[in-house]
Picture 1 (cartoon, one colour):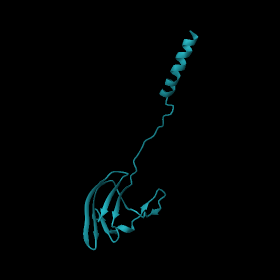
Picture 2 (cartoon, helix red, strand yellow; picture 1 turned 30 degrees about the vertical axis):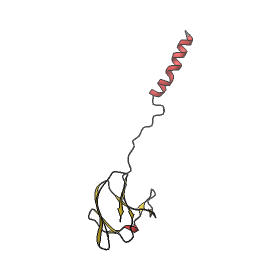
Picture 3 (spheres, rainbow, N blue to C red; picture 1 turned 90 degrees about the vertical axis):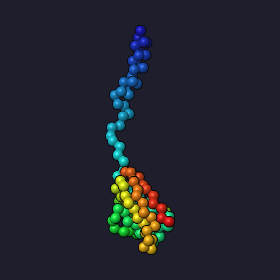
Picture 4 (cartoon, rainbow, N blue to C red; picture 1 turned 45 degrees about the vertical axis):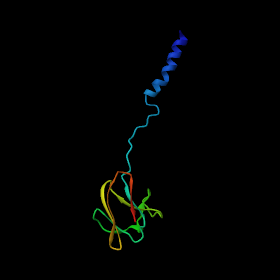
Length: 115
């Protein structure tokens, strides 16, 4: 009888430990609020306008790293935006080469290729 009681108790012990929250981590998970538009392709001499704002030279863009430092990548150019819908116009030599409406989710990056 003692062996049966000991067996039942030892069998129930892991279930009680799991139900009491052993290994449970409390908290929430949140997406990164930073979203980016990347400009790739022939970006030399290209000027972009996002949502009718100030024009900027595409090939001179940088982005902020996790420590807040300006970083320029050699292969892609980044422009930070809020998540949502954006109108992007890229011009070269005064002529519009790209005109796109992009939808960017929180924490994601949308690529705009410049011909």
